[in-house]
Length: 355
Image 1 (cartoon, rainbow, N blue to C red):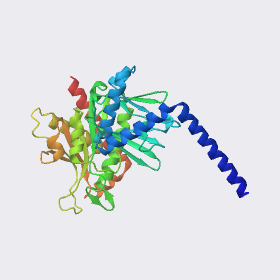
Image 2: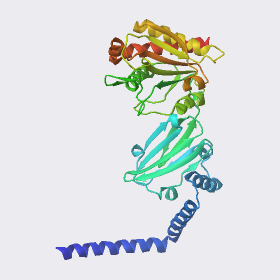
Image 3: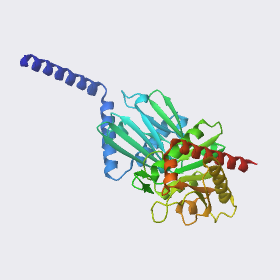
Image 4: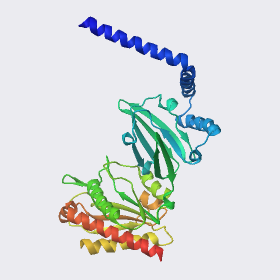
């Protein structure tokens, strides 16, 4: 039996060798071109070329020959043989201005076997990581963009669209804290989780809205983006409103009778729009929640309030250090009421802005 297997394997290897020799003898250019690209790629990477540098070089070479006018403004990726477009995972991480493209079954040779070419106008860096399941291309852009994706045969075309060209209004919603920054924590409940729960309910309302509004979130999971990144996203988008959702606690962190809703605004906003937005948020929250008013508070000592370049409101829905209010904040009904109040407040502000 072992001899039979050995003879079979030997015959297969001989057939493969003959096939390879046939290709090399009859199509030497294919072998030379592949080998040349491999050598060029390795030399450039050793010399410190980035993936973006390689892309620029390949684009210049192909522009000289060709036909595809879309490459003047779009990015083009070629899928390896055996990979379907359904296998490719594309994610737009707005807050990091990074697009990740996950392609299975590729390795470091991908960029010389299938050069990525096209417009680099909005791209500041490209990195590539490989693992046992394939590779991930990370594209860093110079601003926040929406992606217009089109598949044609084995090619993926990506166009970067300015959100301002797509939406009448833009708002940014921030769920406070997250990750290793839980915020106030009482009786096993973290502020970061309540903040996120309210924002997710608000997202549901915004998703169902028929308003032509672009909505961007600083986080929708248990992560903790830097404060600089949260406000930078809003500023880079030239957002019309920036809402940050938080919950309060006493200075000592001890349970007390102190309760109620307050909203911070940017006092340095000479237009008065930040204070107006904060007041509208407070009015709607008090009406929906029936909570006690703790009023408006100038929040210029808070980084995201101070540095936001649009009307900003930082909402402190309630006190987690008040037992009755903590129980309410944990309930889905109260979270939904809060989300509805904030949705109504933002829609009111945007209508006011259109008058």
